[in-house]
Image (tube, rainbow, N blue to C red; front, side, top):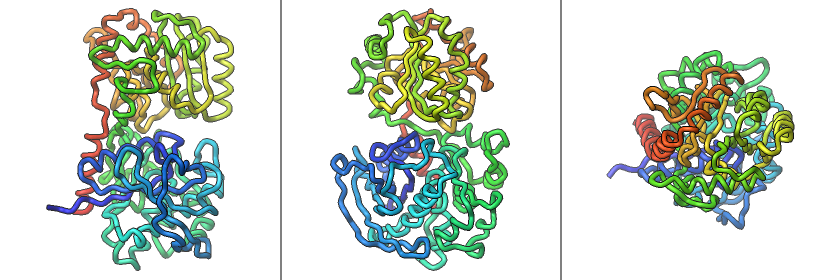
Length: 490
C-alpha cells in the first residue's frame, strides 16, 4: 500500500480559530476534505494573542525552538490542537514578540503594504515554519502556501534545501486567493530580517522600485500555482486583473491552474443550521418564508412575505462593489423591496452605507459589524443575494446563498461566472442574474430583472429548488488538489 501524500498548509488565517475573511474558510475546510481522501494534511498558523485557548485546548509539543531572524536567534514554542470537527493537526507557532500582539493583522483592511510590523510578523512566521519539522520528526512532501503573508516560504524552501538534504525533495505549491494583496515592502529590510542577499536566489533581484513583493517571490519560486476559480486563473493573465504580476504569471501559465473553492456544506446547510429560525430543504423550501419573516423582524422591517428582500453579506471594500449599491440606493428605494446589509471594512464605504440606510429606515437595514448569526439569517431569509464585485477570485457568498435557496445577482467576473448562469426567460434556463460591466445602471437593471421574475412565484421556486441541490462541497476540489500533489511528487 502506497504512503499517503504529506502536505503542510501554511496560512495567516484558519476558521474558526483565527478568522478575518474567506481565506480562513478555505483553510478550515479544504484540509478536512483532503483528509477524507487519504492525504496526511496538517496546518501551520501563528499563535495570535486572540486565540481562545479555552475553546481550542492547546498541547505544547516543543519549547525554545531556535529561529534565526533579524541578526538574532529567536525562541518559539510549538503548540498543537485538532482542527475542530476533524483529526487534522493544527500547529500554532508561538512568539509573543512577533506573533502574539494585536489581532491577526495590524492594518484594518488586511492590506499588503505600509506597515513594517505587518512585514516583520509574516516574514518571521514564514521563517519559523521551517522550525517545525525537527521537533515533529515529520517532513511534508509539499508545503502548500496561501497568499502573500507566507510568500517567502517557497523562496526559503529553495534556499534552505541547499544545506538541508531532508528539504531537497519537498515541493512548493502556492494558492492565490486574491492577487490584489501582494505584500510589497522594502527589499533591504526584508533581506536583512531573514539574513539573505541577492546571491542567495536570482528572484531577489526582481524588484518593484526598491521593494520586494512577497506574492511575486512566491510565484517565481513555487513548483505549482493555483487560483481559486478557473475563470480567475484566466483573468489574472491580463493587465486588467493581473495587478502588475500578469507577465510573471504568463511565464508560469503551464503550471498555473484554477480550482473552484467549495463551501463547508455541513456548516452551511439549511436543513440543520442552528442559527436560523426554521430549517428547510430543496424538497420543501416553504419554511424559508419563516426565515424571511424572522429576518424582517430582526431588522425592524415590515413583516410581509410579498416584499422581496435583497441581502448582502460582504467586506466593505472597493473590490466588492458596495459603491455601486450606494449609487443606486435612491432608485432601489423607489421599488417595493427591502434591503439588508451586513459587513465592515473601509470607513468611507461604511459611512456611505449608513447614510443610504438612514434615508430609508422603513426599507433598508445595515449592521456594520461582524455577526456570524445574522449572516446566516440573511442567507436564509433573503430572496435575492447581491454580489456586484469589481473582481472576485472565487466568491463564497453566492454559493452559500444558493445553498439556502437565495437567488444571486452577480457581476460577470472570476468565480461568479463559474458558479452563476444568467437566467434566460425564453429557455427558462439559468440560476441567477448576471451583468457584464462594473456599472451601477447595469447592476440596477439586473436587480430589476430579478424583481420581475420574483412576481412569477412558480418559476421562482423552481429555480430555488434547483440551486439548493447544487454540489458546492469541497469533495471534487479536493480530488483536483490531490491530482496536482501526486503530479508534483512523481
